[in-house]
Image 1: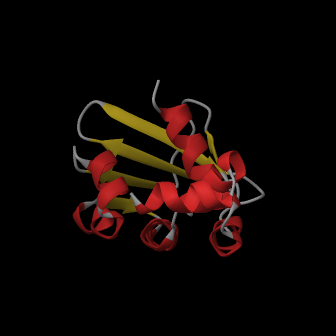
Image 2 (image 1 turned 120 degrees about the horizontal axis):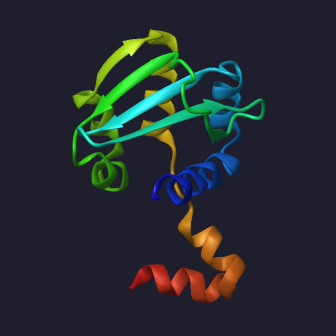
Length: 128
C-alpha cells in the first residue's frame, strides 16, 4: 500500500517545519478523507503533535477532499495547483489549513542528503 510510505514522507516534511505542525495541532483529532480519482482514498487523522496518522476505518471525516487522478504527480511537481482542482465538503477551516500547508510545505533535500553523505556531497549532488 502506498499510503504508509507517502504518509511517512509527509510526516518527515512536517517534522522539519514547526509552523506547519502548529497550524495542524489546532485540528488534532479531526479527520480528512482524501479521494484520489475513483479508486483510492485515504482517511487521515491529525495527531496531537500536528502529524498525520491513518484513521480507523469507519471514522467519520471532518472534511472530504476529492483530488484529480494526477494528484500524486501534482503534489511533487506543482503542489500549489493541487487544491485548485479539488472538490471539498465538510469543514472549510480544516480544508483551508490543509491547503495552506500543502502549498507552502517544502522539502529541504540538501539537508536530508547531508545527513547521509555530508555537506559537500549533498550540495554537489543537487547541483548536477
